[in-house]
Every structure is written in structure tokens, then in C-alpha cells.
Length: 503
Image 1: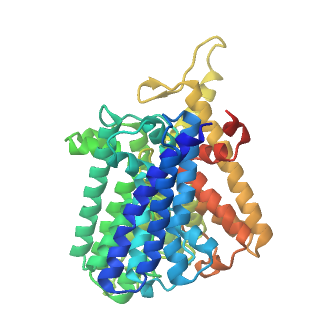
Image 2 (image 1 turned 120 degrees about the vertical axis):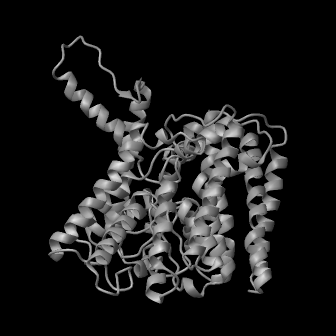
Image 3 (image 1 turned 90 degrees about the horizontal axis):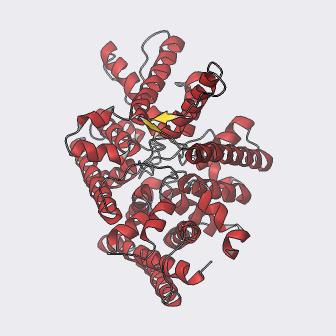
């Protein structure tokens, strides 16, 4: 494997990170927070390292498929380490915890080991939000969209993309990537404007618009989105509906957004994955609402401070109940992880908690910013099972195929879906076992922790204030899980495969 080609690509990506660090540095200088040196050191490491790697790979040519996957894995790891320097420097937290935080950010997982977010320097809060926003569409995607050309353009883009075939928006990969980023920026601005209308301050509106569209879920407050209702700030109902829109938009395929911008409303129901996406969200909300009604003996608004009506109106309580259920369903199925009601709260019963776990596994659509296994793969697995049933009732020599959107799905892609599911379940089992072995958490909580990491979600049934005290080995396993979930396992496996490096 050509180390020069890998060095050249990785160097360019590090230089892009160096440019990105101007944002928190500028905020720090503008507000006089006193951490400019931390950002400057991180920027210097990125720029010097990037230039050195570019020089080492100056004679290299294009990247092969395996090389691109290795670059992808290395980029996410190295950039997370460099981006962690300001956090470790400014907050004095262990290096492992700082890297955990940035990996959680770039992968849009949203698990945080930090507390006291309301008092953190604003430049650090901006940095956390920004790395989630970049990670939403992808580190390599941003790098490739900003350059004119790169010898490994297609292989690099494919290494970071979802490992499943999906249509391209327009001919020409660079053109497609730039369209994606324009749509992403426009949706982010739209959510920010909506939050401003809801009474959120400019700073919070910018940060939350970035973490909503990226389906990352980092907040500027320990109480997450419940903060606004608890503190009586703005119009919590409007704020929550704006974020519901933002999360749903982030979890929907950007191909659908593009088609909608072109006036094709049929894109909302045309593809099976989109129809299933609507159905999963609707069915999950119905189940959660039904259980609340049955357990509470009627309509029951969420706990005070989580959007409940103050006047006791039946209709307002019904709206608050549906809104709280919809918010949490979308926060989990899109893997955003925001909260207005804690998923461990007694307001949600056993059925709701099981629904939440399954939503964590399913995730959003292919071509979205959401994590998880992806709706399209769930659809294909359902089609495979249906085909097995059909074969039981047809003659042995009859040809049967799995069909999606009117086209036969080739066997290689079906094998990839099955193989990824196997790897996904194995990693869940290993992560849950390590957590149970090295902590005093029970089986359910231990498994939910790896569910959260691997599916890039954030919330789990391990109390938030106990996460920083987890054994370092558990944190490393979760970091691997977050990267494996975001990159869909293969790049990380190749990175640690000796045979890949010997090719």
C-alpha cells in the first residue's frame, strides 16, 4: 500500500481542519475568553502536520479503494485527536476524555463526558457544535467539496459514504458534493431563523441549528432542549417544533431534499425507504402515546418544565403529550439525542423504552446525516425474508429475486447488508460485555451504552453523570464503536488489517 498517497490525502484534510479552527479562535478573541493559545496550538499542529504529510506524499498519485478506506479511518482518528487539544487545554480534562468528546462530535454521536455546559466558554461550545456540523455530511466530503480536483476524489468520497448504492444528485461528483453542502447550509440557516423566532438567543440558535441538522445533539445546556421550558425562555413549543423539523430533515435522505427543491413532491413517498421512514416514525409515536394513555389512565402531559401546559387544558395536554413523544422518537431514530424528557423518566414505560432501543438500531435514511443501521437496509432485510417465504411456495427451479424500487438488487449488495448486520450485532455484544465486566451497570444499561455509541445516538440508560467515571477500556471500546458506526465498520477493519497494508 502506497504510504505516499495516504500521506498526501491525509495532509490535505489536516490543512482543512487548520482552516476550520479559525472559527473558535475568532470567537475566543472577540469575547476575550483567554484560550486563544489552545486553538493556536491545535491549528499549528494541524497546519504543520498537514504540510509535512503533503511534502512526504508529493510524488504520489491516485488512491486505490483500500487506500481510500485507510485514509478515511486515519482522517477521522487523527482529526479527532488534533481537535481535542483545545478541550484538554482549556478544561484540564484527561486527554482520553477530550478525544472521546471530539470523536463523539465528529461522528455526531453526542455522548458527552462534560458537565456544566451552561458555564463553558462559548468558543468551546461553538467548537463542539461545529465539529458535529462538519461530521454530519462528513469530514472528507467537506474537504473534497472545497477543492478543485483530487487524484483520489471518487475513492475518497466512496470510502466515507454509506456502504450501499444510492443515486447521485447530478452528474459529476464534485457538483453533487457542492449541491449537498448548499442544501445543508440552507437548512441549517432555516432552523437557526426558526429558533430565533422561537425566542432563542443568537448564540444558542446557531449552535443548535448545527447540531440539529447534523443529527448530533450536542447542546449548550446540561438540560438539553428541556432547558428552555424549565427556564421559561422564549416559546418552548415553537422551539421544539423547529427542532423536530430540523431532526426530521437531517434524518431524511438529501436526495429527497434535492428533489423537493426541484418541485417534485412525489419524492416524499416515491421510494420505499421514504415510505418506511414515515411509517416507522408514525408507528413509534403511536405506540409511545398509546402506552402513556394506558398507563396514566388518559391524556397526560409530560412532567413540568418539559412542555406541559400550565392551564390544564385537555387539548393543550394532548398536544404536549404528542409533541413530547414525537420529539423523543425523532431524537432517537435520527440519532440526534436531544431531550425534553429523559428517556429514563417514569413518564415513559417499558414499551416506550423498548421502542427507543429499536429506533436506535434502525436509525435514519441512507444519504442522510443520521446514524444507525439505516432504514433502507431494514427494508432490504424485510424483502429478503419475504423472498425466503415466497420460495417455500414456488417450484424449485423458479427464479426469484429481491426487488427494490422496481429494480432487482444484486446479490453482492444483499450479502453486504447481511455481513454488516452480523458485524453490527457482534460489536454490540462485545461492547455490552466489556461494559458489564468493567462496571457495576446491569445487562440492559451496559448494552444500551454500546447501542448509543455504535448507532451514533448519545442517550443511553447509563446515567449521564456516571459516564466520566467509566473505565478507560470502556471509553476506548465506545470510541471504536462510534467510529465504526459512522464509517460503517469496513474502514476501521482495514486500518487494523495487516493484509491490507501488505497489498
